[in-house]
Amino acid sequence: MGMEFAPPKYAQVMRTIQERIESGEYAPGDMLPSETQLVRELGVGRTTVVRALQTLAMQGWIEREHGRGSFVKGRPQNAAEIVRPSLATTEQGENADAVLEAGRVPAPRHVARLLGVAEGTPLIVRKRVARQADVISAVETIWLPLEHAIGTDLDKPEPLRHGIRQHLQAVKHLRFDHITERLRARTPTPEEAELLGSANPVLGVLATVHDPAGDVLMVVSLALPGSLHELEDVFKVS
Image (tube, rainbow, N blue to C red):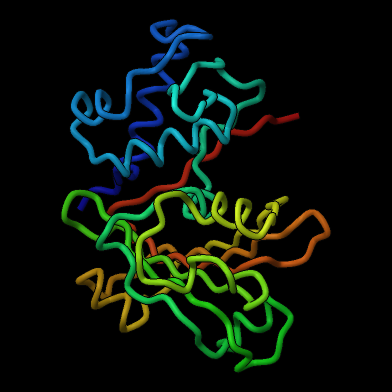
């Protein structure tokens, strides 16, 4: 069996747009095609296009203006061609069938340790899946302390129109400063294996999202099937 893995679809959409910006097809100041046009042209879902555009804006390739569209800024200086999976998870909106669980649960031991609370402390959990076409491409679990989640829509089963990051910033005025991300190959949990339809090893991502003071705002856990994901980084060698 070959070892060539296709990157997730939103990353493919990002790369297509990046290549067009780098070639000059999309020049600085140009308005990008609308989401509807990109969906039709690239043959992907609207959520995939929105996630790609959100991440491109976050990385500085484009600027999104509410009610107007997305505009090209150009290749960012020292741009690293990478989609950090945990950050992308907090940026994306949700499809109607994405959310599996939303509500109050006792903190598991490993999550409690990362949040600095006692095991069993009540937390808000939001568990969901991401899909490529009809295939589940990721199982995503987000844990938040009650003080960060109460008063938001994160404990409700209805899908979020915008990403968790934007929702928390708008409702609770919380600001993300940095993320610590740990990656390892692991065996999926029984629930993850059932959702993914396979007990094959997954790329496990465990991340803590921090505010400017360094306090942990949330914990993110991802199970990414190796057959659908690869991680790539570009960095300077001094």
